Length: 102
Image 1: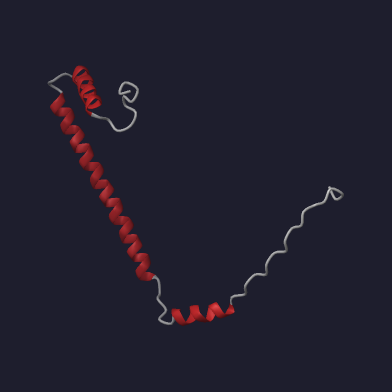
Image 2: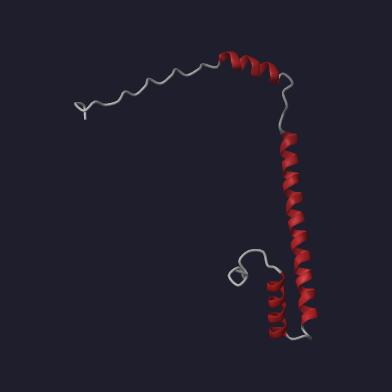
């Protein structure tokens, strides 16, 4: 069953070991520290970019919320509007066709 699940979801210990072994074979032991350093820098830059986008979105949301005027009497208006709501009439029931109408 494990053979069928190889790389089919979250990688487990065997998959991680296999991946590290393939990377070691492809790049050699001398280049691994440089690759790990580059990967760490890339992940750090990605995290900074993600945080910057989140700050921008939060700032834009706060600006929109602060620019929206708040009416102090909105609860009274809601109650008045509820009195004016017209309830729709019930739709007439469909009758079944008889064999003569078909």
